[in-house]
Length: 326
Image (cartoon, rainbow, N blue to C red; front, side):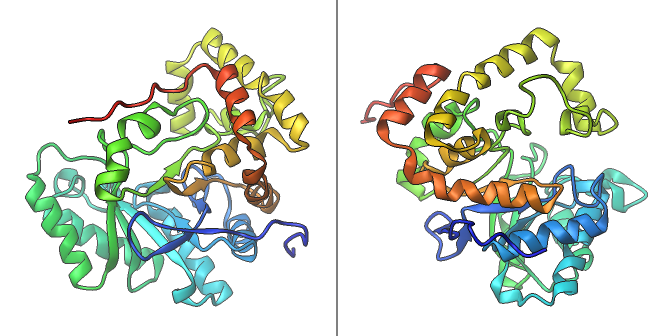
């Protein structure tokens, strides 16, 4: 299946102050590849992304017990893509699926970082990844040990860069409904250390796509109650809370209609409008979803200050500006 000819041209941004450039739309394997999306659909989604200009693909040792890494690695090999054309990232922390004793197979000890990286590379079928993330903070391991271990991966050529994911100081979930941390709490990090964000859940697990306007369709993400994450979500979230979020999202539909775009395009473009976002990691279970995500690139310039102000008024969650610190 060839990519549609009317897709906007992909744009690329530097990852923070590094020289690495990533597509503003990237493709991740959380809850999908190696899991409830079969191998052939995984291949189709990755090819659709690649053909659309996506160069950044993200996974983790934890995703589907390592199957996500395996599926992505197989796709790279199947299509014969040049390694230097790709930016591949993975994350280390939860590796207990790969040993009989979980004690040293999770966390950020030097032992697990180095052994976990070796396992990830074997599953991916690659000699190195471009970016490796510490998937969660490890309060039991000294920070010096963590930093030295990740630096060792870089000096030995198994990764080019390392970063953090899901850390309390810089957790990068970012979307119209979850914005305080990115827009307020990290503000000084952009200025002082050149932090670049690869944000996850830009559509709030699909809620901001508008697909739940009239209920939960069969086959949609929140209907997949056999998935641990979804089952846990429904244990934490009651119907009133869910309905309130959906109603708030529905209020954004007139703005999307005014621009002549889908609500999902508006939501993704809103995330990309933030210059501190290097890439928005999206999920997709079909090539069509990949193409829909890519179309958001063509909407970014339509978000005028007036449109953004209208969105802020509807959501009522814009964080207050940070005053100068002396």
